[in-house]
Image 1 (tube, rainbow, N blue to C red):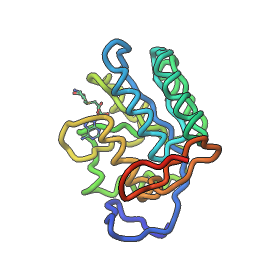
Image 2 (image 1 turned 30 degrees about the vertical axis):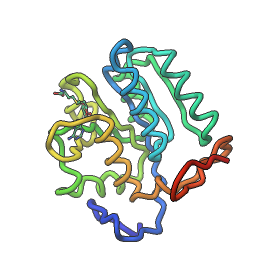
Image 3 (image 1 turned 120 degrees about the vertical axis):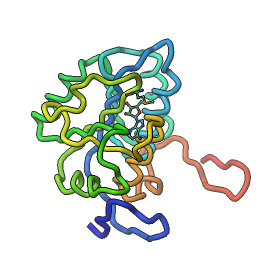
Length: 196
Ligand code: SAM
């Protein structure tokens, strides 16, 4: 790796692409209440370098349709699964050789610890758990998770925590990547909008 610091200075140019597989699991989604926020968590996952999303324990067809429409138009391969029990997803992930990261304000701080570097060093596929309501105590247990990671030790938002985690984990590279088979493509402009 060209950069292995836990805190990436955005002004430093990093040329390396970090290709570790990441899938995001959203726990605690309440279809009546959380549809907008969970949609944002899924879209942020995709835009910032994750290759898939699991909506655990519940199904939400509306959410699935929204995410699939975005993928169809804006490209890339991004898996969407829903309904499986979170413990089963975690067991299967670990059984397949992956590691599990729980994003929580109580965990090891991404800025002041080397936790990101240790996760990268595993070289294993990463399943990231994000909550909504208060998560079950097992989320903190080594029986289910390998790392408890805090994006600052203040409680804030699953979407913000996930976005910052992914941006740092992928060394800022996800924001510049292109998505294959895209029907729509934004051409960055100083002003106005240009879509090809
Ligand atoms: N009130 C809930 C509790 O006490 O556990 C947490 C609600 S918080 C809005 C929802 C999710 O955002 C958490 O489960 C966690 O995944 C994520 N989150 C919030 N702040 C975070 C932080 N500072 N670092 C990492 N994840 C965070």
